[in-house]
Length: 139
Image 1 (cartoon, rainbow, N blue to C red):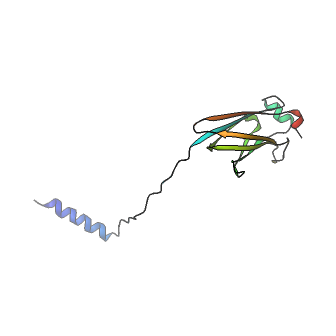
Image 2: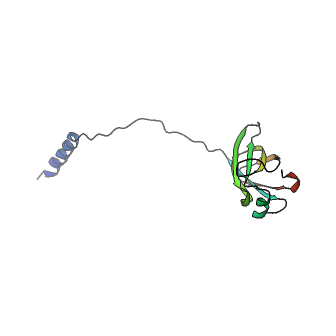
Image 3: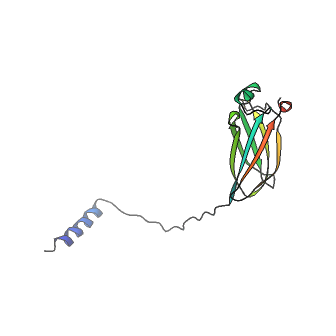
């Protein structure tokens, strides 16, 4: 008996009558080239201490870091809670500079801005930079 081919044909016809259709588009796939990266990790202390009480003593809520590439273009701006005492950023391979400032809850500076120069980020590595906001840098 040839019931299977008849049922298949009936099913295809019923599907067409229901208004079902398939649409395809011919598009070129997007190619994403991954740029090699490395990491920049900043650790900080406030008046020589890595304690929440040191942050609170100066009303420091967060660390603000602005990062600039070798052409001087700002490529990133990061914030970390003062009490974190560490911040890691993934960056493309380049030599960077940065500016680090402690700010209060209103994003107003409570310290002078510390310049960080010649930050060389290389592929697959982590550059660690330790900074201190001495008492004399607090506003």
